[in-house]
Image (cartoon, rainbow, N blue to C red; front, side, top):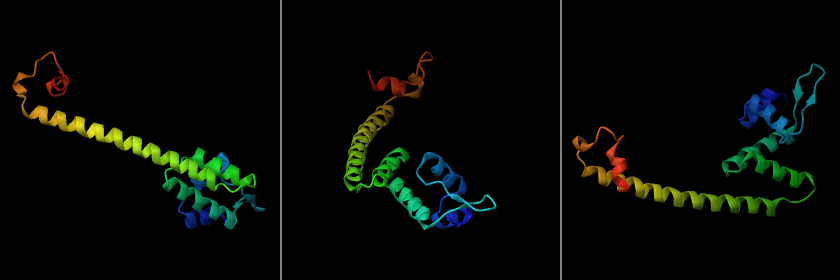
Length: 134
């Protein structure tokens, strides 16, 4: 199939497909006599894998590492599990950071309710934020 057909079937743009080829995530396409790229069903399967892996939060580098393991003739399931576990730990860490930020924002809003805008000194930028840490 030509790149436009692969793009339609996979939901990726032709530009994205060429980018994945340059990054080594897709095997280089065969060229027809007219110079057009020709792709097979394996390319479509690989694109679907890449998109699914991205949906799981994996980076292109991480996806590339999975492909490398597979192309070395190994089953990448253990490697994938390690990547997904690390991704989940990162999500938990970010959730904790967001919970702290939420708490700080609530504190700032509550503090601002007791402040009079008329008391904001000309030399300060904003006493809502300045007062929060005094």
